[in-house]
Image (cartoon, rainbow, N blue to C red; front, side, top):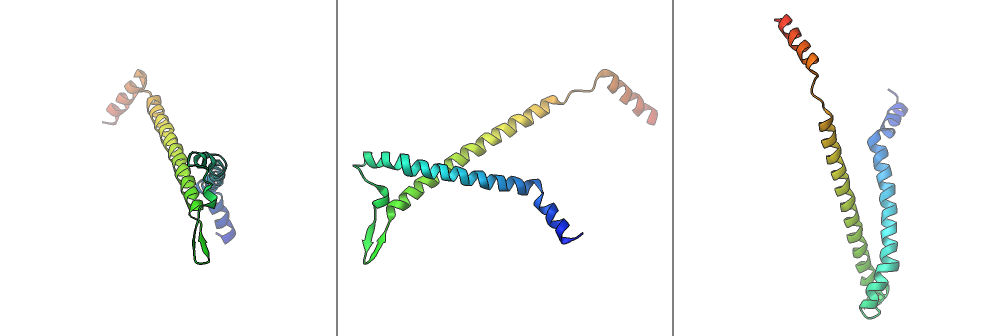
Amino acid sequence: MSMVQEFKEFAMKGSLIDMAVGIIIGAAVGKMVSTLVENILMPIIGVFMGGINFQDLSVTVGDAAIGYGAFIQAMIDFLIIAFVIFMILKAIAKMKENYEAEKAEEVEPDPADVVLLTEIRDLLKK
């Protein structure tokens, strides 16, 4: 098999495509949450904390400014994104569980004539 053919099979595998879709959706969710935190949540939190702008929070050490406010904001981003991903995975697991239960219910017992024919076949084999 040629290298091009092997690469084509690798690239077209369902799991690779699923992973790419997941990464793209994850990046979009991350951007939405970052915007939510930066433009809505942090200003509200800042108002309740006496008008603090978290982007401006920093400590100066010598000539360097350590911006710990941006770090606090990034931590809030992370916590919200982690929670959203947790909820999505929980919902997917629940849907999968329901699907498996539905699938198990769909298995119907053999009709009586099929059972009878199976017994006759087994007797004839003996």
